[in-house]
Image 1 (cartoon, helix red, strand yellow):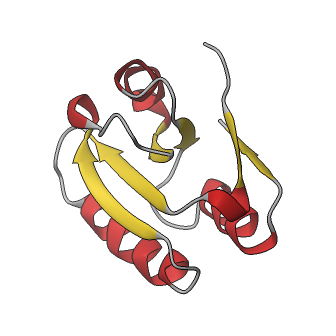
Image 2: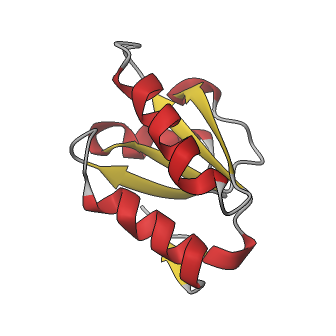
Image 3: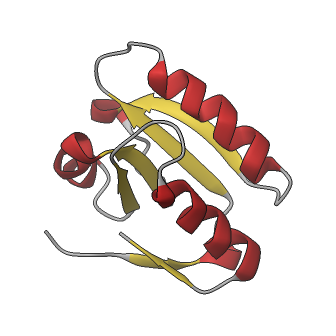
Length: 104
């Protein structure tokens, strides 16, 4: 699986991709809206099979990363392990706040 990268200062949107619809990703979307909204970044929620083709950054559980990459090959896919407090979320916020490359 190839890796993409984006400059954090150019990120304007983040998509939280899910599969089962158990509500955890909806809570994560709300949490990321609060964290990233102050930087002018919009956060949306999408089923992994319906990620918009123009998605810049996709945040999804590690078990969905390959499917997310197949659905949105141009996006930077940032996988995480746990829905609350995963270091991946800090990495995304730091790239947006401080600039620098976000790879996935």
